[in-house]
Image (cartoon, rainbow, N blue to C red; front, side):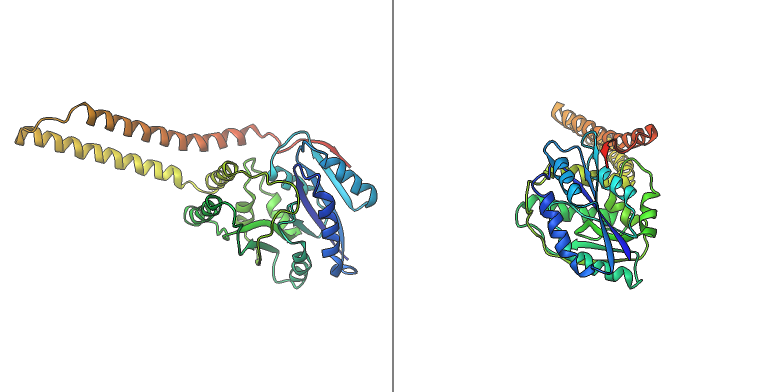
Length: 309
């Protein structure tokens, strides 16, 4: 029988781990006799008793495996650790909040067994009715990614997916420190089929993603897979230089030939402020890319494991 590894990043999910375990087992009953199962929990430096809850599951079920980080390294690092440790023929990545229905896993399994794809991925066909700014920001992010990068990022794409070993090895072959998994999943290519599902409210705990964190995550994705901001900075610099040259020539002509007075200090102050701000913006864009180079050349590990079974 095929072995399915469930990679589950956890951060302060003490109240949801047990519910997730029971829900997954119930959802995977159709696979009995066709596939075996293992859980790969990754405790991302939780401050509550998440690790204790996972250890309690391990006592009851030897299919439960876990590792715990020495501190919070982020979801990307937790996903990487789980995928690296997974032993399954098929590997599933899913969140611990049950917003992604485990009922889809048997269907994913059947689609992979048919042999027509290397990965079955999911995307939401509906969003939460809470948070207009968050939903609008998500749509803007996918719109920018589709126009600023060479990868095809499905709108509403989730990390929840099942992949075979070939697809997984392609993902793990990318050793970059600045990881943006949605982009990596799209970049490696292979044959991917999509499933859609409706938005579900979190079953327990609280979301760890604030609007600010989502904005930083989006910025990480854009700068990881696109150099358009650098090109745009250059183009903006050329445009402003041309604008300044035109204004200078216009002022000279008006003064010499039409004897009009030169504008006063207000105009000069506004122009200086505008161009100074523009310079800072372009320096900031370059700084984002330089900071990525800085992180990459240090070659620090993406995570540190404090405890594992």
